[in-house]
Amino acid sequence: DSGVTQTPKHLITATGQRVTLRCSPRSGDLSVYWYQQSLDQGLQFLIQYYNGEERAKGNILERFSAQQFPDLHSELNLSSLELGDSALYFCASSTGEMGTQYFGPGTRLLVL
Amino acid sequence: AQKITQTQPGMFVQEKEAVTLDCTYDTSDPSYGLFWYKQPSSGEMIFLIYQGSYDQQNATEGRYSLNFQKARKSANLVISASQLGDSAMYFCAMREGGNNFNKFYFGSGTKLNVKP
View 1 (cartoon, chains in turn green, blue):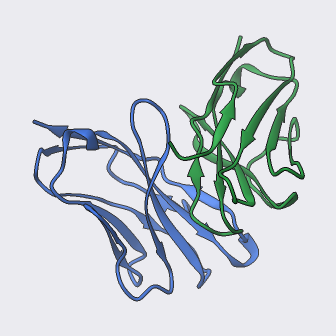
View 2: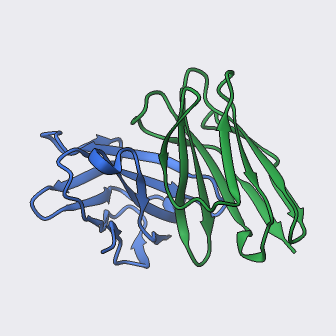
């Protein structure tokens, strides 16, 4: 158990819908990262927040957005969902801006 | 160019033997970090080992060691005395500094099967 929690574990929704994935980092960790893992794209870095501020952006679509709240939990919002958004979404956290990342169990999203 | 290349899609190793998983990387940034993660069939990502670009010695964590060859831009993972529980996907990753500050790149992974 890495100490990073993600909810929900599984999510099934329809195309065009919007969902919110939630992540609570390890106690004391200020950085939160979001990743998408799909069969055809592999593991893709989406975005990083550090202490509430966006720090780095990867291959995140405009339909996706994220934020980190004052209590350091983070949410990833996915809107206008497409079939290709079906994937495993990981959250990870680290103590500092560039520390080792510890991953949560992931949220498995299925868009029908 | 690929930032992280793992050329072995799948590997087999006999239980109790050592195995090396290959990883090469591409960066022009002098400051970077290299990571290895394990992903069992259950899906979670487990951090194994970290090597910083300025670290003089190869990183070791228990049965895991990282063979860091900076000039060749390789960061191979060595697992000694393989166990059945080592069967999993293994991902090499890199964090860059500089203009690509804090972006992370993952390789396509190597699926390791440990045979009894």
